[in-house]
Amino acid sequence: MESWFSRGLQKWYEKHRRDLPWRQETDPYKIWLSEIILQQTQVAQGLSYYLRFTQNYPQVQNLAEATEDQVLKDWQGLGYYSRARNLHETAKQIVNEQQGVFPGDYKSLKELKGVGDYTAAAIASFAYNQPHAVVDGNVYRLLSRLFGIETAIDSSEGKKEFFKLAEELLDCKNPARHNQAIMEFGSQWCKPIHPKCPDCIFKEKCFAFNNEIVDKLPVKAKKTKVRKRYFTYVVAVDKKKNVIINKRAANDIWKGLYEFPLIESEKEIKEKDLFKHPSFKNVAGNHFSLLHQSKSYKHVLSHQHLHAKFYVIFTKNIFKAPVQTSALNSLKNLAFPRLIEKFLNDCQLDEISYF
Image 1 (cartoon, rainbow, N blue to C red):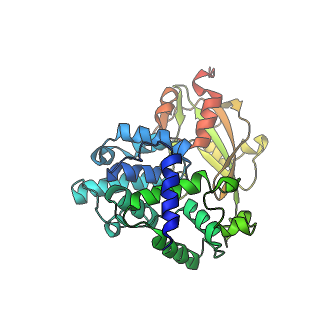
Image 2 (image 1 turned 90 degrees about the vertical axis):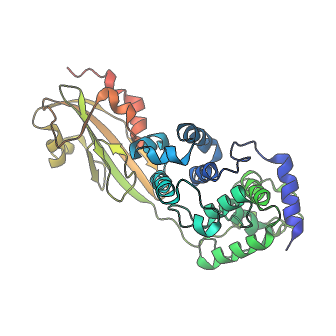
């Protein structure tokens, strides 16, 4: 179907494609790494992480042998940390159950943790040149505008419709090149905002352009509800310059990452109320000094807006087990959420005078 589409795409791709390190790869491990890293991430941000992971873990065996803390530290700042945990678990699965050999077909790839329809299609086509169409946000946007599809992309009906169309448009003789081209075109030309319609190779055939509804497509049925959360962190330092840390274990954001003792509330806690709070007293004890109160930090996640403040205190307590601690000068070795990393960069805890 519509051979003009794939021919035009691939011709455009030859001229306009970006030179990216995974573009010439046929190693399924490195293609898998790039695809997981680029989920929910722009290429400009993800590139340095891809280079870091391929350097630190050149083979899937290296990734499987790493600790979760090491993997999360290398992932720090990229967000959506479940991707990193799934990446690590899948590496161990491939080494332990498949002798370190990546699955060689779409169906088997989908059985890997964290690998869905899109990622399986990408690996199958890029590594093995198998005819499976990729359908990501760029593809949804391009196809909905070009063919005037108003079915919501986040509905089951819409997903089936777009997948069927993408499969019909696929160049089965050159699926890898076709898939690279369609994603690149959607990313670089048919952009969400300010698409390059006047110079588009498809403008004469594009339903949205010719009907002046480019900004109306694609359609989403569901609106994202944003949840506000207020975090107050108590950065407690003792006489030995140790600081209390916790590792987030709940099924919540940042699972597996470190943080300082946290008091979460429905609104910002004022200083006078904080010092009376049972959770604060539990950390600070009866004798403490407030050394630093941070500015308010706002951290935006896809479905949440976090508002955070940090209180650095010196306590005469000497921290003992079962409290988990870290030396101040070792904090840089731990994987923290980007929010806390920003605070640490601003505050420079090891330069504060505690005595």
